[in-house]
Structure formats: C-alpha cells, structure tokens
Amino acid sequence: MQDQFGRTIEYLRLSVTDRCNLRCRYCMPEEGVAELSHGEVLRYEEMLRVVAAACRLGVRKVRVTGGEPLVRRGIVSFISQLAALPEKPEVTLTTNGLLLAEQAEALKAAGLTRVNISLDTLRPERFRELTRRDGLDQVLAGIAAAEKAGMLPVKLNVIPLADFNADEIADFARLTMEHPWDIRFIEFMPISADLDYASRDGLSMGDTEAQLRRLGELEALPHQDTSGPAQMYRLSGAKGRIGLIPSVSGHFCGDCNRLRVMADGRVRGCLFDNAETDLKTVLRDGSDDRALEQLLLAAACAKPEKHLINDNDFTTPSRRMHGIGG
Ligand code: SAM
Picture 1 (spheres, rainbow, N blue to C red):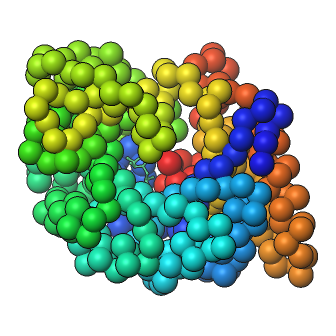
Picture 2 (picture 1 turned 60 degrees about the vertical axis):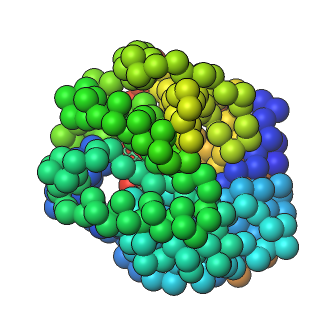
Picture 3 (picture 1 turned 45 degrees about the vertical axis):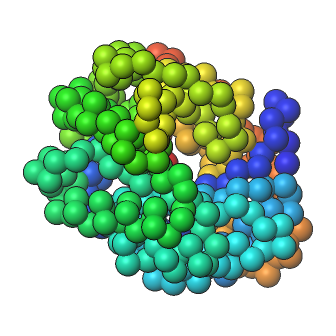
C-alpha cells in the first residue's frame, strides 16, 4: 500500500474500544465520554476482516489500542486470530497496564509479541490525581507480568508535563539501570482541548533531554525498526534504554507508515487530520473484500503529506486520543 507521497503503509493501529478504566485528566473528562453503542462499535469479526484486508495490502504490524483495549471482553482470543492471519503480522498492544497482570501470560500465548504501557508517575498519590483512579500497584504488577511472560523489551510511555511529573524524569530514567526496559518520553500533543491540561503544559523535549543529560553520559543508539520514531539512548552501564519521541516538534511525517482504524470502523491517515474514511458500511452491506481493500487503499492515498500542528490555523482534531487510539 503506497500513498501519493511514495510512503509505504505497513503499520495499522487498531482501536478496539473507546472505553477506558482510567480518566486521565489530559485525555478524558471526569464523567467519561458518551460511549459508542454496541451497534456502532465494530464486532471482532468485522475488525478481523479489516486487518486481513490490510495485511493482504502489505500491513506487517498491528498495534491494538483504545480506549483501554484490555477492558474489551474476548480480547485474548481476538489477538490470537490476528496473529494467526496468513501473513502472520506482528501484533503488539498499548495499555494502561491496569488489567495486564492477570492477562499477560494468556496474551503472550495468543501471539502478542510486545506491550507498550502508559505510565506518567511512579507516585501513588500523583497517579490518583492524574488518572482519577487508584491502581499504580496494579500497573507495576502488570509491567512485571509482561516481562515475566517474555514480551520484551517492555516499553513504558511517559508524557512529561511541566507542573506534574517533570521532577520524576530522573526517577523514570534510573529504572533503566536495573531493568531491561525502554522508558520512552513522548511529547504532549495538542489534542486535548478543553481538558485539564493544554499543550502549553507539556514539557519540551529539549527540557526533558537536558534533565536526562544531568544523570550522566547518554549514549545515542543506532535506530532499530522496533524503535519507531524514538531516538534511543543508554545511560552508561544501564540494562534498559531511554527513548525521546518529539511527536509534535519532530518531523517524522516523511517516514509515516501508519493507518489508524477506530472502533467505529472509520480510518484516519493522520492522528491530527480529521479526514476519515468509513469502512463500516461496506462491512455490513454485503460488499466483498475487494470493496474493503479499495477503501483502505483510498485512505492510504489520502494521507496528508504532513501534520499541521505547528501552523497558526491548526484546529484541534475532532476526536481526543481515547477515541483515536494514540
Ligand atoms: N489505554 C491505552 C494506554 O493507556 O496506553 C491506550 C490508549 S491511550 C489514549 C494511548 C496513549 O495516548 C497513552 O499513552 C496516553 O498517555 C496518550 N495520550 C493521551 N492524550 C495525549 C496527549 N494529549 N498527548 C500525548 N499523548 C496522549
């Protein structure tokens, strides 16, 4: 699958639900959001048809996300179906980790190769403040379970926020001395308008990097396919690695290889672009797989050349991160 700018599309992010068991202040309002009804959300067999079509067109990696993917019933068996597709795509998952401890072994056995776990603080009271829920111990148990199950390297995604967790950057980075984990600092994105945090609250990547450099020598590592857009580093003597992902200020669009399918069956070519293609209609009106493939090709073709976040007339996307899948 190629887009009009010559980029090859081989990575699909699949949001299996817009529901979440946390209420992170920068992602969801306290009262939650109007959830999609069951009829609006694609059934697993519909999602499988979409992924199968995408794999026939060249997708090699599928990341299951949400909302919180582990709250959707039947997720383990769905992941085993994804992993068993004829093209044997690599299947990975992004989770807040709350339900991971109890499912890690089964997910690994189902064919999940790796997990990214989102965690912005190592302090229980801050976890409660940010997510409006308890559960840091459960997340830490989930990380340990993923490691024990062999989903390596375990990756932790951290969003540095100037007035919230900036003083924990060193604590997160020091985890790599003892653990073979990837700790990835990701720039806050302007996608959460009207919530408790705005983009100005995100710590700049430069400030994050400056804090990391105070910890000691930071060796830049060569880029690997599994690093995605992250620039990876290692503190001297560390078992794990540190990643910096300037999703907003960096210029990754030229290498973008993604399509995003959302739980309601719409596809986005860019996280920050509101243009979407509907797949649900052809999934439900008796059309054959050829029609589905044509729509996926059209969605790939319509990918914008680059995001416009830094332009003056950029308007906040119509969906927040929990609805798109990050
Ligand atoms: N529930 C799963 C999780 O927690 O990883 C998957 C979905 S969640 C929406 C995916 C990621 O988006 C999380 O790491 C979350 O921190 C991140 N996120 C949400 N809003 C964001 C924003 N405005 N900027 C950057 N990342 C954001």
